[in-house]
Image (cartoon, rainbow, N blue to C red; front, side, top):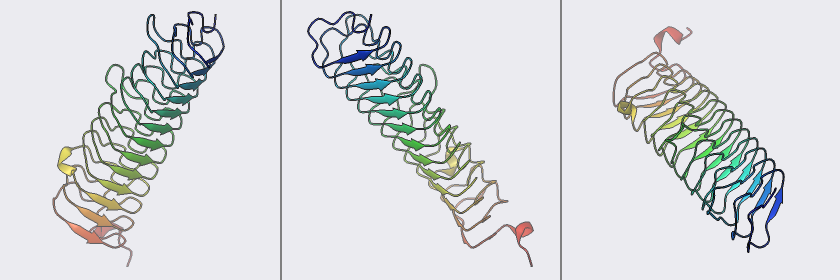
Length: 238
Protein backbone atom coordinates (compact mmCIF):
# COMPACT_ATOMS: atom_id res chain seq x y z
CA UNK A 1 0.00 0.00 0.00
CA UNK A 2 2.97 2.33 -0.38
CA UNK A 3 2.30 5.27 -2.75
CA UNK A 4 -1.24 3.95 -2.96
CA UNK A 5 -2.87 7.14 -4.32
CA UNK A 6 -0.10 8.22 -6.64
CA UNK A 7 -1.46 9.30 -10.02
CA UNK A 8 1.09 11.47 -11.79
CA UNK A 9 3.86 12.04 -9.24
CA UNK A 10 7.31 11.28 -10.60
CA UNK A 11 10.63 10.13 -9.19
CA UNK A 12 9.21 9.15 -5.80
CA UNK A 13 10.51 6.26 -3.70
CA UNK A 14 8.19 4.66 -1.13
CA UNK A 15 9.20 1.66 0.97
CA UNK A 16 7.01 0.46 3.83
CA UNK A 17 3.34 0.02 4.62
CA UNK A 18 1.35 3.24 3.94
CA UNK A 19 4.46 5.21 3.06
CA UNK A 20 3.62 8.12 0.72
CA UNK A 21 0.07 6.83 0.95
CA UNK A 22 -1.95 9.95 0.04
CA UNK A 23 0.46 11.77 -2.24
CA UNK A 24 -1.01 11.96 -5.77
CA UNK A 25 1.01 14.43 -7.83
CA UNK A 26 3.97 15.34 -5.63
CA UNK A 27 7.45 14.67 -6.99
CA UNK A 28 10.94 13.76 -5.78
CA UNK A 29 9.95 12.35 -2.39
CA UNK A 30 11.74 9.48 -0.63
CA UNK A 31 9.84 7.77 2.19
CA UNK A 32 11.12 4.68 4.01
CA UNK A 33 9.27 3.12 6.94
CA UNK A 34 5.72 2.34 8.03
CA UNK A 35 3.48 5.39 7.38
CA UNK A 36 6.52 7.46 6.56
CA UNK A 37 5.22 10.58 4.78
CA UNK A 38 1.73 9.06 4.80
CA UNK A 39 0.22 12.52 4.31
CA UNK A 40 -3.42 13.59 4.07
CA UNK A 41 -6.13 13.06 1.50
CA UNK A 42 -5.98 15.50 -1.40
CA UNK A 43 -2.62 17.00 -0.37
CA UNK A 44 0.64 16.81 -2.31
CA UNK A 45 4.24 17.58 -1.40
CA UNK A 46 7.63 17.68 -3.07
CA UNK A 47 11.33 17.14 -2.42
CA UNK A 48 11.03 15.54 1.03
CA UNK A 49 13.05 12.68 2.52
CA UNK A 50 11.98 10.65 5.54
CA UNK A 51 13.37 7.49 7.09
CA UNK A 52 11.77 5.85 10.10
CA UNK A 53 8.43 4.71 11.52
CA UNK A 54 5.86 7.56 11.19
CA UNK A 55 8.53 10.04 10.13
CA UNK A 56 6.87 13.07 8.47
CA UNK A 57 3.62 11.14 8.83
CA UNK A 58 1.24 14.12 8.71
CA UNK A 59 2.79 16.18 5.95
CA UNK A 60 0.40 18.03 3.65
CA UNK A 61 2.18 20.55 1.42
CA UNK A 62 5.54 20.89 3.16
CA UNK A 63 8.64 20.80 0.99
CA UNK A 64 12.37 20.21 1.20
CA UNK A 65 12.28 18.50 4.61
CA UNK A 66 14.66 15.73 5.72
CA UNK A 67 13.74 13.55 8.69
CA UNK A 68 15.52 10.49 10.02
CA UNK A 69 14.38 8.65 13.14
CA UNK A 70 11.32 7.20 14.84
CA UNK A 71 8.47 9.72 14.41
CA UNK A 72 10.84 12.51 13.48
CA UNK A 73 8.92 15.45 12.02
CA UNK A 74 5.71 13.59 12.88
CA UNK A 75 3.38 16.62 13.05
CA UNK A 76 4.90 18.67 10.27
CA UNK A 77 2.23 19.71 7.79
CA UNK A 78 3.28 22.76 5.77
CA UNK A 79 6.71 23.36 7.27
CA UNK A 80 9.63 23.45 4.89
CA UNK A 81 13.41 23.22 4.79
CA UNK A 82 13.52 21.49 8.18
CA UNK A 83 16.17 18.90 9.07
CA UNK A 84 15.25 16.56 11.94
CA UNK A 85 17.56 13.70 12.91
CA UNK A 86 16.85 11.55 15.95
CA UNK A 87 14.05 9.86 17.89
CA UNK A 88 10.99 12.17 17.84
CA UNK A 89 13.09 15.14 16.86
CA UNK A 90 10.81 17.95 15.70
CA UNK A 91 7.85 15.78 16.69
CA UNK A 92 5.28 18.54 17.30
CA UNK A 93 6.59 21.09 14.81
CA UNK A 94 3.81 21.92 12.36
CA UNK A 95 4.52 24.95 10.16
CA UNK A 96 8.06 25.94 11.11
CA UNK A 97 10.77 26.55 8.55
CA UNK A 98 14.51 26.03 8.35
CA UNK A 99 14.96 24.31 11.71
CA UNK A 100 17.78 21.86 12.38
CA UNK A 101 17.41 19.40 15.25
CA UNK A 102 19.83 16.58 15.96
CA UNK A 103 19.37 14.25 18.92
CA UNK A 104 16.80 12.33 20.94
CA UNK A 105 13.71 14.58 21.42
CA UNK A 106 15.58 17.60 20.10
CA UNK A 107 12.99 20.29 19.30
CA UNK A 108 10.26 17.83 20.17
CA UNK A 109 7.95 20.74 21.00
CA UNK A 110 4.48 20.99 22.49
CA UNK A 111 1.30 19.57 20.99
CA UNK A 112 -0.53 22.10 18.80
CA UNK A 113 1.87 24.91 19.66
CA UNK A 114 5.20 24.46 17.92
CA UNK A 115 5.76 26.83 15.00
CA UNK A 116 9.27 28.21 15.64
CA UNK A 117 11.64 29.01 12.79
CA UNK A 118 15.41 29.06 12.21
CA UNK A 119 16.39 27.11 15.33
CA UNK A 120 19.48 24.91 15.55
CA UNK A 121 19.78 22.33 18.35
CA UNK A 122 22.21 19.50 18.93
CA UNK A 123 21.96 17.06 21.82
CA UNK A 124 19.44 15.00 23.77
CA UNK A 125 16.37 17.03 24.82
CA UNK A 126 17.74 20.30 23.45
CA UNK A 127 14.89 22.78 22.90
CA UNK A 128 12.47 19.96 23.69
CA UNK A 129 9.74 22.39 24.89
CA UNK A 130 9.95 24.79 21.96
CA UNK A 131 6.76 26.52 20.82
CA UNK A 132 7.14 29.81 18.91
CA UNK A 133 10.76 30.61 19.71
CA UNK A 134 13.06 31.32 16.79
CA UNK A 135 16.68 31.88 15.83
CA UNK A 136 18.08 29.97 18.83
CA UNK A 137 21.38 28.07 18.71
CA UNK A 138 21.62 25.37 21.38
CA UNK A 139 24.19 22.61 21.89
CA UNK A 140 24.52 20.16 24.81
CA UNK A 141 22.39 17.54 26.48
CA UNK A 142 19.31 19.12 28.10
CA UNK A 143 20.47 22.61 27.17
CA UNK A 144 17.57 25.01 26.70
CA UNK A 145 15.14 22.18 27.32
CA UNK A 146 12.42 24.45 28.81
CA UNK A 147 12.66 27.23 26.23
CA UNK A 148 9.30 27.96 24.65
CA UNK A 149 9.04 31.40 23.02
CA UNK A 150 12.51 32.83 23.67
CA UNK A 151 14.46 34.08 20.66
CA UNK A 152 18.02 34.79 19.55
CA UNK A 153 19.67 32.83 22.36
CA UNK A 154 23.04 31.10 22.17
CA UNK A 155 23.20 28.27 24.70
CA UNK A 156 26.13 25.87 24.81
CA UNK A 157 26.86 23.22 27.43
CA UNK A 158 25.08 20.39 29.21
CA UNK A 159 22.16 21.71 31.31
CA UNK A 160 22.97 25.30 30.39
CA UNK A 161 19.95 27.58 30.30
CA UNK A 162 17.70 24.63 31.02
CA UNK A 163 15.05 26.71 32.86
CA UNK A 164 14.71 29.50 30.29
CA UNK A 165 11.23 29.82 28.81
CA UNK A 166 10.66 33.22 27.18
CA UNK A 167 14.06 34.82 27.77
CA UNK A 168 15.74 36.25 24.68
CA UNK A 169 19.07 37.60 23.44
CA UNK A 170 21.26 35.74 25.92
CA UNK A 171 24.65 34.13 25.51
CA UNK A 172 25.05 31.22 27.94
CA UNK A 173 28.11 29.03 27.59
CA UNK A 174 29.37 26.37 30.00
CA UNK A 175 28.10 23.41 31.95
CA UNK A 176 24.96 24.35 33.94
CA UNK A 177 25.56 28.05 33.35
CA UNK A 178 22.44 30.17 33.71
CA UNK A 179 20.50 27.09 34.69
CA UNK A 180 18.04 28.95 36.97
CA UNK A 181 17.06 31.78 34.62
CA UNK A 182 13.30 31.72 34.17
CA UNK A 183 12.29 35.31 33.45
CA UNK A 184 12.33 37.80 30.58
CA UNK A 185 14.00 40.13 33.10
CA UNK A 186 17.17 38.20 32.29
CA UNK A 187 17.11 39.28 28.65
CA UNK A 188 20.47 40.27 27.26
CA UNK A 189 22.62 38.48 29.83
CA UNK A 190 26.00 36.98 28.96
CA UNK A 191 27.22 34.08 31.10
CA UNK A 192 30.38 32.25 30.15
CA UNK A 193 31.99 29.49 32.22
CA UNK A 194 30.88 26.36 34.02
CA UNK A 195 28.17 27.27 36.57
CA UNK A 196 28.43 30.97 35.70
CA UNK A 197 25.26 32.71 36.87
CA UNK A 198 24.05 29.35 38.08
CA UNK A 199 21.53 30.83 40.54
CA UNK A 200 20.43 33.88 38.53
CA UNK A 201 16.71 34.02 37.90
CA UNK A 202 15.86 37.50 36.61
CA UNK A 203 19.03 39.61 36.32
CA UNK A 204 19.06 41.53 33.04
CA UNK A 205 22.01 42.77 31.00
CA UNK A 206 24.43 40.98 33.29
CA UNK A 207 27.87 39.81 32.21
CA UNK A 208 29.60 37.05 34.17
CA UNK A 209 32.72 35.39 32.80
CA UNK A 210 34.59 32.65 34.62
CA UNK A 211 33.86 29.37 36.35
CA UNK A 212 31.32 29.94 39.16
CA UNK A 213 31.20 33.66 38.38
CA UNK A 214 28.08 35.12 40.06
CA UNK A 215 27.08 31.56 40.90
CA UNK A 216 25.28 32.67 44.07
CA UNK A 217 23.42 35.77 42.86
CA UNK A 218 19.72 35.38 42.12
CA UNK A 219 18.80 38.91 40.96
CA UNK A 220 20.55 42.19 40.18
CA UNK A 221 20.79 44.00 36.87
CA UNK A 222 23.69 45.50 34.91
CA UNK A 223 26.50 43.71 36.75
CA UNK A 224 29.76 42.85 35.01
CA UNK A 225 32.15 40.42 36.67
CA UNK A 226 35.17 38.57 35.34
CA UNK A 227 37.14 35.79 37.03
CA UNK A 228 36.74 32.42 38.65
CA UNK A 229 34.18 32.60 41.49
CA UNK A 230 33.84 36.37 41.03
CA UNK A 231 31.04 37.72 43.27
CA UNK A 232 30.63 34.22 44.69
CA UNK A 233 32.24 34.67 48.10
CA UNK A 234 31.48 31.28 49.63
CA UNK A 235 33.09 29.60 46.64
CA UNK A 236 36.41 31.46 46.85
CA UNK A 237 39.22 29.32 48.20
CA UNK A 238 41.91 31.23 50.10
